Image (cartoon, rainbow, N blue to C red):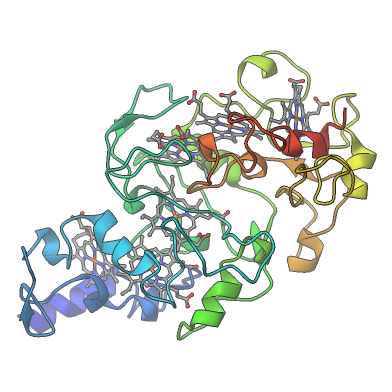
Length: 321
Ligand code: HEC
Ligand code: HEC
Ligand code: HEC
Ligand code: HEC
Ligand code: HEC
Ligand code: HEC
């Protein structure tokens, strides 16, 4: 009976069906049940302190479970909990998604985990206590980073596939290694092409994609998926192409300047082409916000809300004034 159940479960996770799985970890053959579930309310023969938990999870909540490896204690698991040191070798020394504060702590610099909050810019007035499972499919799927096809739990089917919408230079290592993970998840290892506005916009649906310079653009926050050289007077194409001076690292103003912000490259076909700086590059959510969080208010990549010498750096890269 137990064996039949296990076969049924494995089948439903695509292990025996030969389904194509593009996520790189916690998917298909790398979805190791015992990393997250206990078999009989015990782990390695030892009783679980405080357990057994619902669906026989090893921890009392999804956040706690995932963060038990992703908090920096496992050098092969990408660290998503501040402070993060595993990307120290890269510039900027951060991952693509950035970092959280621990679950249950209010986070001004990123998505707050585990505290019920209103979803800003959501037309349905939804509230939720965010956990990793709202955004990532813990049993894996075909999306980049196992991102949910439908983060709102409705009926969307949003594909963000590696090799199609996102590109990397170094693939995650299998089996995982500390050096392999530090290289694979670093921000500099990722190039973006498409899909993000729709994905972030599933929860934040009041942010319109917005054509440039057409009302109500000014009233729906900054336009996204608009190219820097699309012809309107607002963006500074030559400054963006040059990649030096105000806003960029090495700026003539003391204390000012950050690495070039991420952008969409609609013509990308591989990692190298995703890095090409040209006038067709587009601004998107990830140009200004990191998905998990940063040390600046509102997950921003520079301290626009907090102030200081760098407060306009990102804006200046595209709008040299
Ligand atoms: C990376 C962690 C992780 C791994 C690995 C994992 N699971 Fe899960 N599983 C979860 C989480 C999280 C839940 C949801 C728990 C909840 O909602 O309380 C879950 C829920 C379940 C459920 C309940 C139904 C559902 O889908 O919500 C079953 C059954 C299950 N897992 C079986 C498995 C099997 C079989 C494997 C190995 C092939 C596996 N899991 C591997 C994290 C994992
Ligand atoms: C037992 C430790 C462990 C647990 C528990 C764990 N992870 Fe992981 N996770 C890893 C490791 C190690 C990697 C890196 C694999 C690699 O790159 O080779 C990883 C990679 C990932 C990735 C990147 C996958 C990709 O395709 O690029 C995501 C997303 C992720 N984990 C989310 C989660 C979530 C969500 C949970 C909780 C449901 C969770 N992890 C629980 C160890 C763990
Ligand atoms: C599953 C739904 C969901 C998805 C998907 C989602 N968010 Fe959020 N977001 C929330 C919730 C809930 C809050 C409010 C709680 C908080 O402040 O963290 C929030 C808050 C924010 C905030 C304000 C942060 C702050 O400190 O108050 C920003 C900025 C943001 N999200 C950007 C994004 C971006 C960019 C993406 C895509 C990478 C995204 N969100 C995807 C649910 C979501
Ligand atoms: C609001 C949505 C959201 C939530 C909540 C969320 N993630 Fe992510 N995560 C993302 C997105 C989007 C990416 C890809 C960002 C990119 O590549 O630009 C990502 C990337 C990752 C990565 C790759 C490493 C990195 O930093 O880029 C890991 C590992 C990961 N998430 C684990 C987790 C874990 C563990 C949790 C819960 C503690 C969690 N995520 C909660 C949206 C989310
Ligand atoms: C990655 C490039 C990029 C960054 C970073 C950026 N912008 Fe923009 N911005 C654009 C593009 C492209 C447009 C649309 C083209 C246009 O309207 O000429 C635009 C348009 C605008 C507009 C006009 C909106 C409209 O509806 O016409 C304003 C105002 C603006 N940006 C302000 C800012 C501010 C303030 C910042 C910093 C917080 C910023 N931008 C950061 C690229 C960027
Ligand atoms: C050019 C930079 C830029 C881009 C592009 C951008 N944002 Fe923002 N966003 C900001 C700034 C700056 C703030 C904080 C100040 C403000 O509210 O105007 C903000 C605030 C937010 C908030 C919090 C609003 C609130 O009222 O709490 C959310 C949610 C958000 N952005 C999501 C997104 C999503 C989703 C996208 C992509 C569709 C996106 N942003 C694109 C710069 C940007």
